[in-house]
Image (cartoon, rainbow, N blue to C red; front, side, top):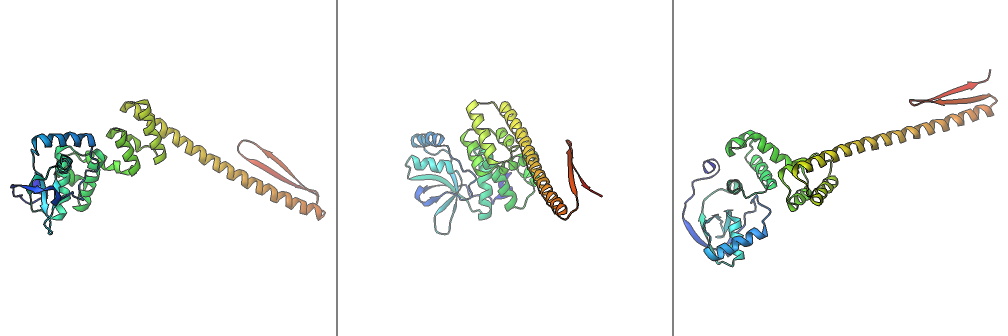
Length: 271
């Protein structure tokens, strides 16, 4: 299905290509490569070789760029192999990013953040709606929408989620928090307390509620402070005015009363 949508029919001929002539794909959606997993793959390749060829595109300078199979390429480099089996395909530059994403999606090799970035890239490059992309990928529109929403988290928070081995549900819950500082605090608490997803969601809900209350209180304090400031200015102005009237021979005084809602001033001038 994917090949008919995004790429021309490849020539399925396997060729051994020197690793030194191969370059990673700058449009590769995968950003995080687990070292332990790569090390295990490198040991397997050292013993048995690369079982599944990578897919590459030939560049005008005679070098090759990886379309699919960067993990196998990296592991082969770690295993100090000289060459790697590859299938060379003729595909446009515009479509290589789509193929790289789809290959990873089929193998489920991406993190949920990488998957979200891949979806957004496909929609932007091919001017597709979420609904159109969902039809092409065979996924529900809500799945794609929920993934793309994760990109509202800043880059540092995404890295913290990844480093802490938190789940996509954790990441979605973090969207309820207002800023990076509060999100980082939540991640730290989740890790320290070794919270389940359900308990982490309750913690985040509590933090979100508390932060909203804190913002309301800060707003109230600011409003109250401004009100007191205005009241002081008014009192000062009135006292100066009464002082001027008294100096001019106009007997004047001011009475002040207040309750929970207002402050009342009464100016009395002798007849």
